[in-house]
Length: 104
Image (tube, rainbow, N blue to C red; front, side, top):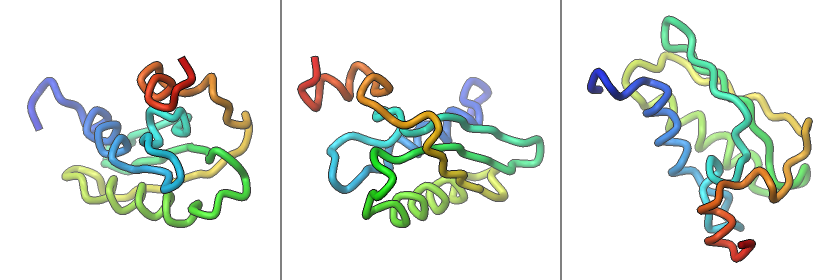
């Protein structure tokens, strides 16, 4: 990790490799990640949502996030907190995600 790359940058990069199996855009650009907190010792807490409360891939997505974040050097633990407040909507997506899905 270079001086200009922070642990948070690495985490955000990894989150961009996690996809909802039903949507060809990563969870970060979809706007599903609400908050990333990195503690002093490398403990990470991610608050995120899903596109729908009944998302059939929920367990798979959360497991993927935990596994990939915990594989980053410097991370000792990753806790994923799922929330539906506020509910996700298309306006939370990045411009790139909107473009890719044809919303622009």
